[in-house]
Amino acid sequence: MSLLDRLRGFISGQSRNYNVLLMRGIVAQFMTQLVQNFNNLYIVELGATAFQLSTVRAVGSAVSALISLPAGWLSDVYSIKKIMILGMIVQVVSVVFYAFAQDWRWIIAAVVFATLTMTLVFRIENIFIANSLTDSNRARGYGMRETVIRFFSVFAPSIGGLIVHMGGGISVEGIRPLYFIQLAGFSVVGIYVTMRLEDVRPESAFDPRDFLGQYREMLSSGSNLKKFAFLQALGSITWGLSMPFPFVYAADFKGADSLVIGYMGTCFVLVTMALAIPLGALADRRGRKFAIFVTRPFFYASYLLLIFAPVGASWVLMLAWCMRGVMMSSRAWMTMSMEMVPQEYRGRWTGFSALLQNAIRVPSMLLGGYLYESVSPELVFIIPIVVDVLVRMPLLTTVPDTLRKD
Image (tube, rainbow, N blue to C red; front, side, top):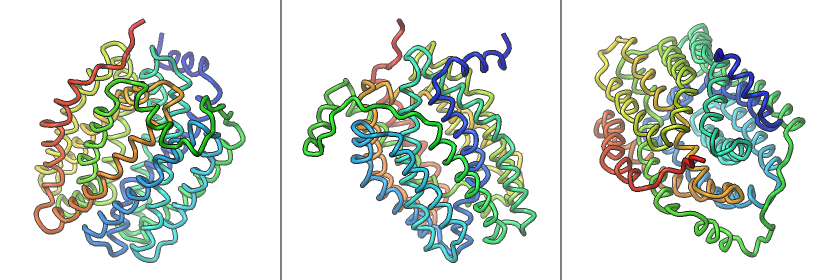
């Protein structure tokens, strides 16, 4: 059976919600990939220093931490469709601030709304999808979805790079048109999802007086939850230090122009598209942790190649982002996280995890900005590797795999 037949057969057998969110994912991913590699460069071009850039990102994480618990709780006891609609509206507002920004301070509001979007849309979307799939095909279902979405966004980063190039290169006026395109795309797909998505009735009673009690109930519903939440929080050190800087570093120190940055994004999408299904099948066959351990070295290689790439060696930068794509192809971590708790607790679990992750990400981002600006830019890429190798992965070996082989 061909890959196309497998995809068609799998998708046709899924729920309406799975397919509605697949369509949303296709449009949203294209719009995101069109702009994503230029977001931090845009903030810098608006006048922000490296530390101010990390401060902007830290403010967003702080806001996300504040709303994570109530948002996660509401998604278990209230209409998750209504929460998702609110999140899509917030996403459009975020893009408006980007599109009309006059200096970097405008982006503070944009990032706050964008982080709210992460909590209100992407986490809720993962709950919808996880609930639509069975334990035996959950990782494969994520992989199938990832492959279809990535297929339609393969050339989005390169198109974005070309638009920036035609607009005058890496500059405010060169990057700004991307946000107007993104604004139109998110608005249209938001209307589509609002009309087509079916709500899911919560399984928990709505009792605002028992807010903390229900979180205590969630933490007692599964084993190793606290340890796994700590592992995810440590990941915020990995991402928080480095997240704002890869493309800024590539442009400032490696001679990357808008076209090269676009090509890096396309390499990333190509690899994730090619490997999403096989890595999903691997996670369903050999276990979630096995897939995580297999792909981790590629993440380390991506940062090392970025650091040691000769100036002007665009092929090395593209190879680095191919390596990054291997690690990001696997949805094993997300699958394992969703399987740590019963279905009725997944909203609260994602909220609790997000609180810890974003709370740690705030100082991590500020430290990253300081290191990048005042000590050594390379440290923001080296420290995450050290933390992952010496702390996170050894700790993960002590957590039982969540794959159930029936």
